Length: 74
Image (cartoon, rainbow, N blue to C red; front, side):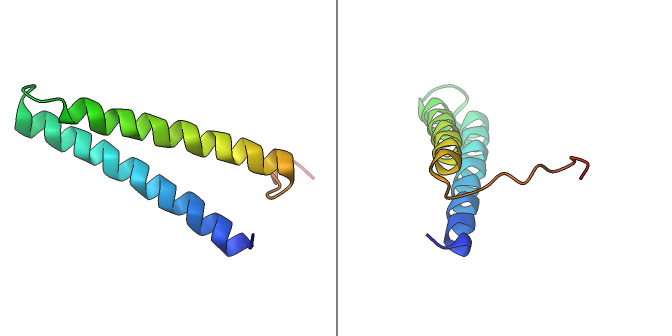
């Protein structure tokens, strides 16, 4: 898997997470608690976040990506 493809995948999932967060806010304001669309949008956001974290952990374990230690002294 190329570096740009991994970066694109992670950024795409982050965009989906932010999209579902915005959808949850929108549904909360529009529906005023009459439907479950807010809960569904926020549940999708949590599932995507957990999936992304698990993917990053798996990718580090498999050696697909390497943490670079931002902020560490050389």
